[in-house]
Image 1 (spheres, one colour):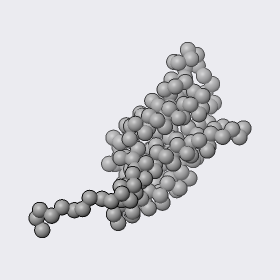
Image 2 (cartoon, rainbow, N blue to C red):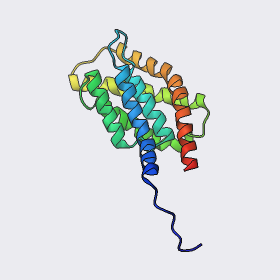
Image 3 (spheres, rainbow, N blue to C red):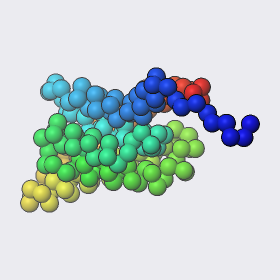
Image 4 (cartoon, rainbow, N blue to C red):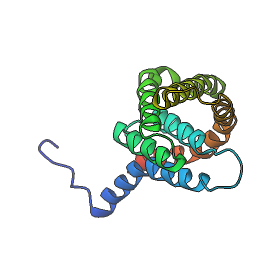
Length: 177
């Protein structure tokens, strides 16, 4: 019927939509805080942050906005005691590049997405190394960057396996709404 409007969404429906929109950023921040606990091993926190930003930007770009990437990058800088701006710039660059490749990557098999992610991880490690060198005016050790790259490479399949069912559940909830 013409002229008939759909009823305004109720409070619960709006809260549900807000929770689904905030879920990727909030869970990423919580995982970053949990993984940053000092256990005497190399910190996997930058690898977790990069994997989450990559995954959510690829599959739910509206929920992983540039502002959220900025906040997550700042949280990474604060938790790792690195110079402010390195994590922010890294997350924003990754976010922007993933958005540009999104139409292609979202339809590809997992192994190809993982291969592209490995390129992003290498680029992020190199960018972090170069920014550390410029900001400190001397070359930092290369080994931490290599360890971070290898952690990113190894953690992405586990992160994707954990985040994919959550993404699909959010899609199903949106389809029902």
